Length: 421
Ligand code: PLP
Image 1: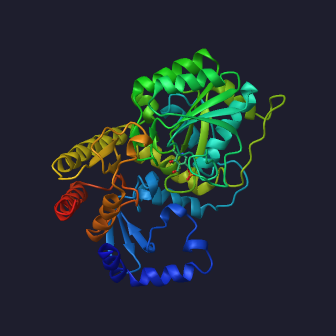
Image 2: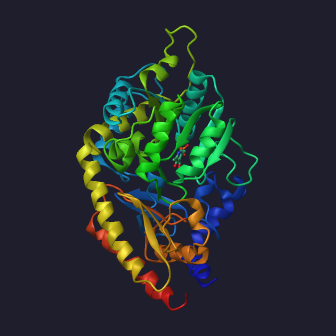
Image 3: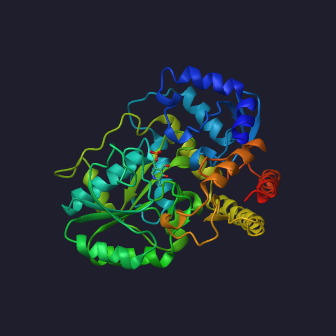
């Protein structure tokens, strides 16, 4: 209650803005994930790794547009690419050279991606990847995992919702090979594909054990089931995604988020023989459309970003810094008088208010939700912009100043609430 009151007092203009927005958009927003009670803060501008609210406060941006904000807000190389795109006109309705540049960059970086096609979102990329698997195998069922997230209209029955994925599916337990294998066997005749995040992002940076991923890889290869890695969030965790880091190559990969340089983006790609069904010169080819699939801003910003900014070396460096930061935060957490830990890999991490190992969403049942909420409000008070669920994402413009500020804020949270819990 006190945290809410301080929040209300600090953000009166955001409240007024929210009240206006709520008249024309249910809940005052168009992205549920950005709603935060009692009302969300409105942002009016952003620079580097900072965002500024309508109430005049500046925050260090650890939300990082849910991983799409990897480049920060004003990268000069990307800016120039966008300005050049602006100058050359932007509703083209034809192929553009940057399209091939970005596709080539992606194919050279991600081991499984021999050919790629673009979409406008990660959700759409997953829809197409699953449909590709169904088309190629002639089977219709998808295996997904408890806690998995693959996009807004792709809800696989985790929570009651009238929005349900338009596929038959079976949900397997994450990081539990025995349980997963039993379901694979039981569904083998109907399974078109297995769709898995090699680290569950939205569930709270729950890391897959490489042996679990490898076992799935081996089984799907032996049984001719298409293995799809949803690397929409994890593609940034090395130059070639988690598939490169673990040395496990899926049949297909879906991408999104930062790869569009900060613009709407999605892509699905994989083995040439699978992707070839989209070649209009093939008999019985499958059509794949989308007015903005190759829009000049995304293609130009994405190509500039991957070729000049987020190079393989930059990816390695950022993720190493993330590992160092997470270790530092975990040291603070270990000394807290309540259970707390930071999970994740490299530049993506998530706080959990439990000291038990987090191997699946089931391990979060006993995480203290009140403490996690207080963590959110405390960080905001310390001018850190976190996600409500405790995910913290690094961006390229961040340096020691930003990491020190986060560590200080976490320490203050521990000092503040250690007495109460
Ligand atoms: N897949 C994963 C793993 C995601 O984290 C997300 C978004 O958070 C998506 C798919 C959906 O991407 P988009 O929001 O671009 O549709």
